[in-house]
Length: 155
Image (cartoon, rainbow, N blue to C red; front, side, top):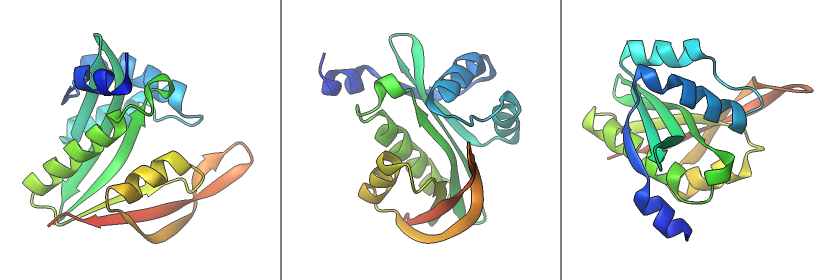
């Protein structure tokens, strides 16, 4: 099956509490320092925009975004490593940006590891630009890694 066919059969829908076991599994497979269940539960409770991508009745990706004050911040965007390169992350990102516009956000922000070349390339291709950095933001096996702050105007 081509990646185009896979993307067409992936559905996006709002995340619910019963998704968390699968969300945590994808998060754990994709990241050395994954979010905890508490992170996700807190985001759901706060009413953040939390979405999942499903393929063949299993979750293969998820995304979380907060909105407010004319801005939105993409807090988490994750696709199972075995499903990357199939435009699932791009679809999740575009869904969040669309929701940000609906919430009257004029700017979207996110932090990304500069070492995550694939994610940085995705964000740049969708119009994000580097606007700063946060020193020592991300944990690593050797200590800490800076975060690249990126932003995109939505209107």
